[in-house]
Length: 120
Image 1 (cartoon, one colour):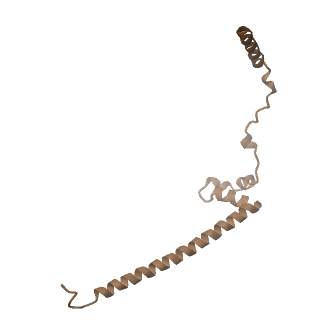
Image 2 (cartoon, rainbow, N blue to C red):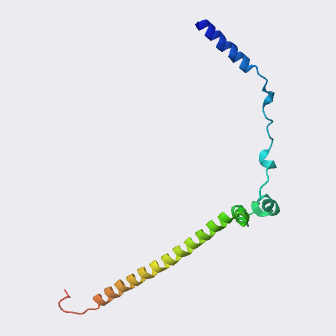
Image 3 (cartoon, helix red, strand yellow):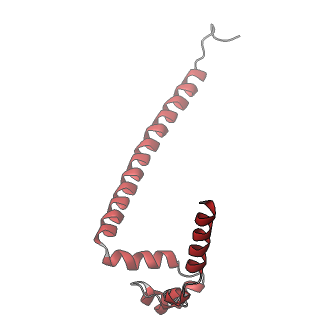
């Protein structure tokens, strides 16, 4: 029984290995070079991406944001959050500045007291 099972497994493995491999799909050469996208035109038009003047990431993002409503909404929300953060930080700095001024003034006034009891 073991010999029959072994022989059948060996025969099946030989048959499966001897199949014609030409049925596979042809490999696409240079798929990245042949790919086109909505930002390909912007990259081809602007050759300054190799120089230090432009930022290719920002240029691609601006090209993508023109066509995508979800990206436009996200960009608007990010801008609003940044403005709110700047406002909050400005208010915080004002409060901290007033507090520091108060304590500096209090220290200066307490140092100007000329009571004979407080002198050593």
